[in-house]
Length: 509
Ligand code: FDA
Image (spheres, rainbow, N blue to C red):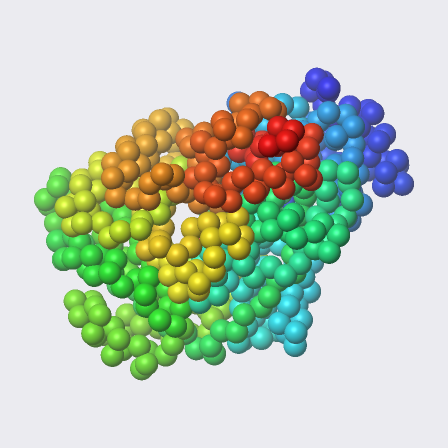
């Protein structure tokens, strides 16, 4: 086992012998390399993990060929060094670049090819590609195709798709993971496998079960989906004094049943108010994406949300790629911003997630406002399910949150000063405690891509299935055991592990 503060000579020798080259300095960044820190920090999105006490890797491998990834896996295993695989670095708890044991990072940012085939509605996309780069590349080829994945353009496809991945098109087409047709992965023995050679069980596991427990995903083959030439973004906000609580009740009754895969998202946040509550209030932003023209949807809006304004200025018709920018809060004519790989401003943040299966009463919402008013930066994002999500069975992929869910809530807080960390994290626990009465139970479900270490952690290499069930059943429900079976089959020595990796089952279980 390596204990030195830098990568061992034997690792370097092993690596160069596997890639048949002595010149590894462009691929392996050791702590002495001038670009080590800038590469390490470049895709860290959460400032909670960008400080001097965060454990740092012994080296960062920056592969630009698949053989580099193979060599990294083979040599780390041989030397007893752990691996952290990073694509876009958005992991909420930093699991793609932090480990308590000696480790290296395989950072896939140089594996970025995108091969779009509009005729066959397919694309091969390497793991280091961001969603923004993918959406941009599709739009360059066609205005009437898109891909159903997340809203934030800097997310990496490697982590995102392996954890599920949802955004504005998921009520129409399902998750990003539902639209994967093939994949390439480096397994624990350093082999490059595709769907055929990895087999259907491993192919099932990596589409929602999180890639990091099973290998290093190199690329995805995606099914592109048709989008209308013109879609409509609607944005309106109301405070609770303006009747927002009643409007949320109405929204809860219909948001998962709206036809055409339309996406009616709510963003709820603290705001300056009218003097009551110490000058603060709660503001609800109705942030909708309709896959229709304004003309077609107006009658529906008037009938279902008569209290919401239907002035023309609230609606904006645009191409699908412009809606990607608009929903991500980027100016519509700045398509090139999609190619920026890091967020414009980075902050400290903590998030948690819940699934709502029965509408929350107005009294329940009022209690929630009370807790939100205790913290200026409190933010909730409510994403309606239903549509295509209810048609796909819970076991089709490891992502089990399908039929029966009205919407998902993300509780999200961000801040700028490390001294504020405790206060903000405590707030997320308080709101989560309050919401227990109103959300899914037994297990209380959570979304893997909104990773939350409060749910539980693997203590060591041999964490049992029972111990891991603490967090595993929340993310995967009845699919957790099957994930553990796949893990036992493909990585019985538990080489690919982290604080929330899938456990190996004891012999015979
Ligand atoms: P990162 O590189 O940190 O990886 C995340 C996890 O996947 C880690 O465990 C990592 O080891 C593993 N992994 C990464 N690449 C791998 C590979 N090639 N092979 C094997 N394992 C790999 N989600 C969503 O569904 N919809 C949304 O709209 C958003 N929006 C959003 C906004 C912001 C600002 C953030 C920070 C996050 C989101 N997310 C989201 C959550 C996002 O989907 C989630 O964090 C993904 O795991 C991020 O994938 P990255 O590759 O960027 O992360």
